[in-house]
Image (cartoon, rainbow, N blue to C red; front, side):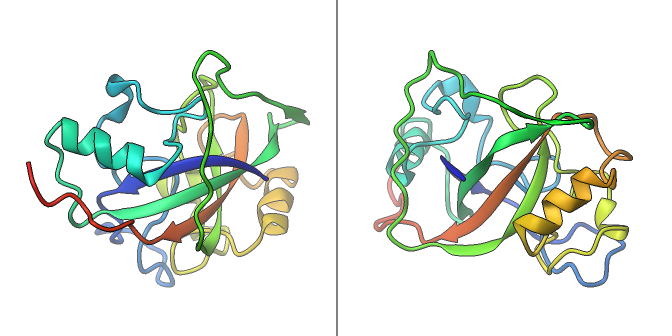
Length: 187
């Protein structure tokens, strides 16, 4: 797994009308169901995987742009080094023109694995388990994530994601991490 960085998510609660009873909240990588803290790409402080190298960089972006981070959850992500195009596994690369130097967290809690689409090839687009409701057909944990890398890989290989958004698909390990203190308090 490749360390790809951090993201703060604003809404992680289970959406109204979401049919899967076992899902309590949504920890998907994409922002279709649980929003990123802001439309962050326009600030050009993200790395070549379209995440942030450290919580401090993310916090600085928020401070510089008067974005309130209270109520957000901080996530750290790692991605499998191969992506699946629906037929075969192949390598992919980060955007080489954007500096990338991910600082892994000292402590992290594995929450599960998400399958994410990358049709355009850069930023995460869709998490079909939550965005397309595939969690109604593919067993997930309480965060709408798969329990293991093997479950994600076998679901892709067997075509269980073919009813979702088009790929290629990448498998992410989703970790929750504590915000470094102090969190933004002044604007």
